[in-house]
Amino acid sequence: QGSYRAELHPWDRDRFRLYSAPGVDDVLGPRFATFQFDGDRATSISMLDATLACLLDLGYARMTTSDVCARAGLSRGALLHHFPTKQALVVEAVEHVVKQMGVEILSHAEQVACSDAPLARMFEVIWANFVQPLFHAALELWVAARTDRELYAHLVRTERLRGSGILRLYASLAGASARQERFADVLQLTLHLVRGMALQRILRASDTERRRLYELWKSMASAALPDRPAHAPSARGGA
Image 1 (spheres, rainbow, N blue to C red):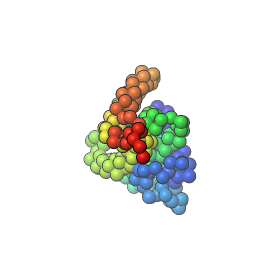
Image 2: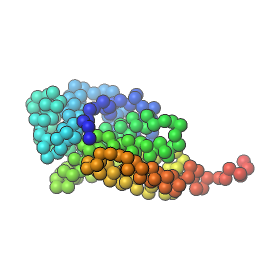
Image 3: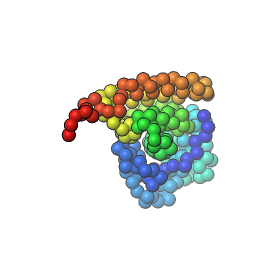
Image 4: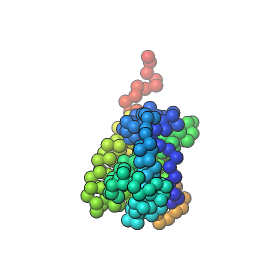
């Protein structure tokens, strides 16, 4: 799976040309728009980054607050000042992981060749987002939420709040295809498919067969979503 190493943070707006894409602020929240943060906030971010790294390397069940302190290079007192319990730390980590995944979507979108068709670009960004280590950190939280009612409630709230913004980010990459009647269904089916493939990577590391099947799905989905909206005026019509 590889280790998560934080390089992007919610205040890194200047890294991206797509910072004004629909859904960005919904995913990353109002803090994304400001560069004003104090030392306490920076310490908190370091602890949350360390939490994601521990979730990835140790798993939710084995992770302790001592592990987080060691990874962050901070004292236990500093941790308790911000997060008095492991539960409080993990609850905040839920929102942090969703925001970080939003930042990664922007990062992947910048790396995909601009010459690609918009819909193909969206598919590539979705693939990249689900093969990154952050997905496995999120997976640890989802599994833990099955038997943790407080974590479950917070995870559901965060997914509802930030998830719609992530969908709009993907739609903003799809160009005219996003206006097709079937686009929302195709997008949801794509996300379900890639989540399942990402889970399978836990047991089978090679992506060769999964990538072949994903290419097949892309061709099927693209056929269902022509570049021109269904109700667009015909190119033969006069002005």
